[in-house]
Length: 565
Ligand SMILES: *[C@@H]1O[C@H](CO)[C@@H](O)[C@H](O)[C@H]1NC(C)=O
Ligand SMILES: *[C@@H]1O[C@H](CO)[C@@H](O)[C@H](O)[C@H]1NC(C)=O
Image (cartoon, rainbow, N blue to C red; front, side, top):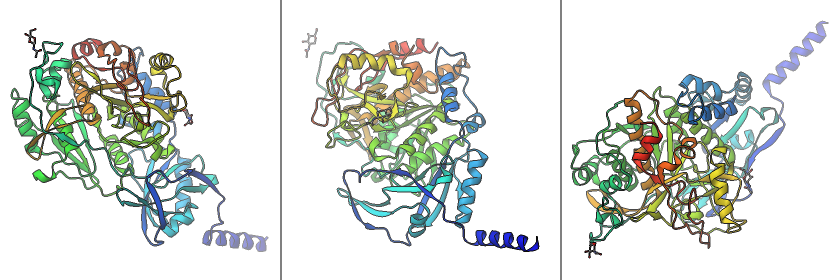
């Protein structure tokens, strides 16, 4: 008996000192290096990597059902948004998962800390040598050829077999950074304003060549009267050191909104070491555009510029993760969030795309409308690029957010750069199946083999995105891109929410089930134009939904009626 006890104790001691090697299983891998990057060599073994690990969430299907229930106008639960705690219950990992991952980390001397309110994301730092061993990875240096930017990535990684079902993903591993971001260029100073006879008497003639807030008010019927409910808020995402300039906003309002105080402004929120310096030289085209077409359109809706710093960011969506976890941690996040950044879906790991998409579902379930620009490369993706098959953008392929495409001219037609198409990651959600199948039937065999007919189709809606006048660094100029369209549509949603809040009604929250049902007739269907790319004519716009301008652009009076105001 005694000997036996001693033997068991000894074995246990050996086990504690040197864990048995676990059997490993490939968890994520990419077939090749994304276009534009080259392998430059092994990563320095002592370089410390800041990694994040997502635990498997306990009930994403339950979250999706809850989201649809509160977002579908015909549902008995419509508008009954969830609390922070109710949402966290769906995504918090199971105690088993937490224990399994903690044990693995403890075995390897890793200290991790929780970085999300529900405890489903952990962060930890280890050198390349340890990361290669821990994850059966081959972290190497990859160089983006056009910009020279380097990043440390691996083309595959593994986790212990017994952690399958507990670990969702480790990042950054196979997701590559987006070297360009998505920035609209200042394309030209404002053009002379010729006398043009337009179809609608209400729209100023100058709008044919230069879009200002008055043009949008006339085109879409957006009211100029101030919002009244201070708890109804609008968030504007700021990334990649794009700063929103107060003086530029003041000049913009003085010139284009003389009916409201030129001191009307926004509040700043920061994370990851974000800031918002105010020298004219640091004014960002994207940030100024986003702030001028929210503060300048959603009259007196309290607007927040959320500046995400570069502390944890090498351009591979860390900022997207952090801003979402930041907002999920707030007890009352802004009811609308507009973001004019994104990248091609094929640069991102499926697991990461899925995780971020679930984060948008979490915010949607809490009553937040999430809007993103669809991209500026037509069917070629976020920016014009070489391609043989169409490149859907992220997060527009996620079914739990609202993707905004662009129009041009008066009367409006599709902007040819407006990205749209079909996700390869996310299946088509049922709320859009009727609208999308009508389009596909009419399309016939055009572009066959170049896109995924069963994928989530985007954009959902559109707004003006060309010849939009802004002020940057004190200079007036015109910009174009779906970056213009997202803040404009978001402002319309915020004004509708203001009306709802004034009547004690809940905000619109996740918009798509409404937009594709009772909301569709409240949008101006854009039926002309197309979005060429990849050596094709792209998709044609037409009657009903299309992958260029979605269901169309806002008609404020009709939208008001559709939401019951
Ligand atoms: C605009 O319409 C008016 C009246 O219909 C006409 O007299 C005028 O010539 C038109 N101007 C242009 C630039 O077409
Ligand atoms: C097409 O979309 C479906 C549904 O999302 C997906 O399962 C499939 O993998 C996609 N096909 C390709 C080739 O990406």
